View 1 (tube, one colour):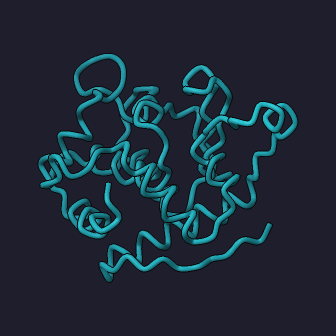
View 2: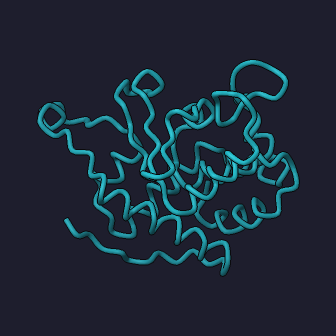
Length: 197
């Protein structure tokens, strides 16, 4: 998703009149920038709203390592809203009228309906978040860890198992606040939050 499109998308998402669960899935995709499959298959037992964490088990991740997603205040509110409409399914995004979880195309078709066909994909939130967070001055290791990317340097990977949880928690809250500002004023201005490590 090109960064210039992000404010327009956020406003369109707020006005989306389709299925509420789909709108909330897209909101979480922007707030957490996890992979689409990880989001669609999210289970209630992975989410701890009091701790503001989503713990995705290794077997559900591309890199086959468990991943902790710190949840911003806005992400917690979104999940709480999902909880209020939850049925009996173990999945946060159950498939309507069938076993399992939300289809691969549900969020993408919602984006098409909002006018973003050929302009953006759900996976594109990961790229735009990474780009903007790097430009904001956040440490690349924090961003890489938030994206659940593997360390390419094998020696460093063997020794560095840092999760950077407190730093990522702060980064994710600033990201969510930035998205709120973006939706309100529509200008993509990169605030320099600066590195503290």
